[in-house]
Length: 107
Image 1 (tube, rainbow, N blue to C red):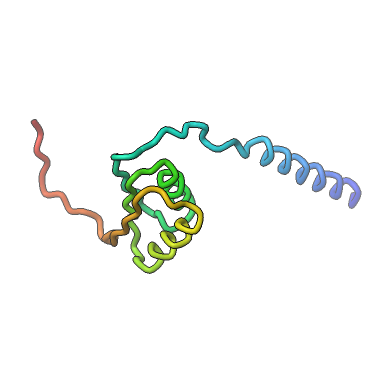
Image 2 (cartoon, one colour):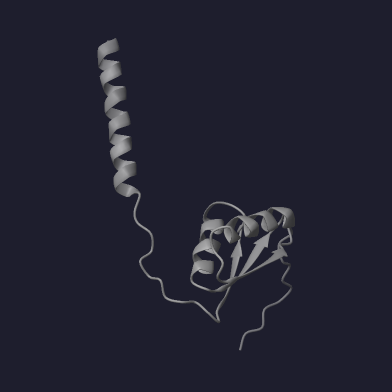
């Protein structure tokens, strides 16, 4: 019983490793300049937001980092600037409350 459990666990780990290796993907091959374009990235101080900011800066874009914590946004800008010198990075504080809309104008 223990041998069967160990074999099943090993097979699961090997399958997960193969799946993660196969599913890792590659970086975007498109390196077209985004100079003159402005991007607003929410959650830009961590995870996918941070990597999006980094890639847009590499492409010479103007990126607005919308974060709830300005200190964290400044740290992110400093970290990105260690490796990327192009692009303009600007941080703004994102309001934590959703926008209240009283009405919509339809044309």
